[in-house]
Image 1 (cartoon, rainbow, N blue to C red):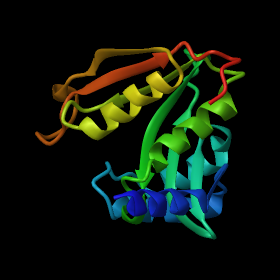
Image 2 (spheres, rainbow, N blue to C red):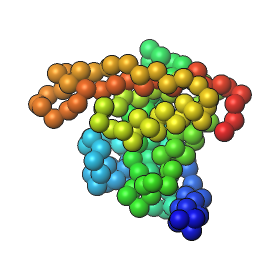
Image 3 (cartoon, rainbow, N blue to C red):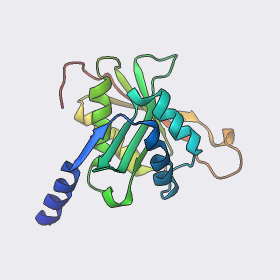
Image 4 (cartoon, helix red, strand yellow):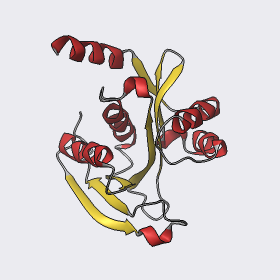
Length: 175
């Protein structure tokens, strides 16, 4: 077991984090289409890279995109960054990459924001654990409230969404 953990850590250490460019949009879209994430148009990812690069994160191993976060600062809550989607390539799952990307986002935005927000379905236990872990990492609160009921979504294929609000994030706390 120790060798597996060491190997996983070594792999994550080879990954670098950056702001996305429009050239990353197609790879983000491809990663989503190979996963269980909600699918959006390729245009959405290109647009996020162009207009919200400061609040998005890409993780690359060499030149290959292996993870991303799309996020933005809501106009009515300038003290928060809202995480829209987190994608991790199947080859990197279980290695802590999503946590590392979230920490990259928080550290990059920490001077501007006090909260990290997201919506998560009740069945998505992995994402719920990820955001609760973020709260523990920054020694802060994780407030969960109901956000969007399932009757707001067309068809019968979408669960309700719970709002997660992590914070306040201490401006001087380094992780």
